[in-house]
Image: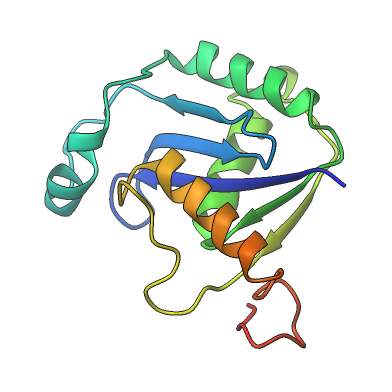
Length: 154
């Protein structure tokens, strides 16, 4: 079974997507940034924006690159620790119009980590956060993914 770990950064609660990352245990990760939205939330300006600018793509290229990556991982289980991470991924897959949507078979699992976990090398950077989530989840023996485990699941 193929696993991917998803994280996103966005412009405040419920805001526009800034970056998205998918980390994979084989170290073949995907990361992309969109052009910054107008009116950056002050918290985001302080904590997220300093870590951006490395891989900015126009929206069409961003979606095409993500689609190509996900096609190579068809059937994967995608883990995330925040509901909006899945919402942003689903909006990208849905596309701006029906004809631009892409369907990649996958399973999504929401996991909840203990306070203070995971510990990314660069907090509030989507790829660093996704890798940290992956490492925590694998090292913890999938805790947080199973309702009978010691982690909380939502």
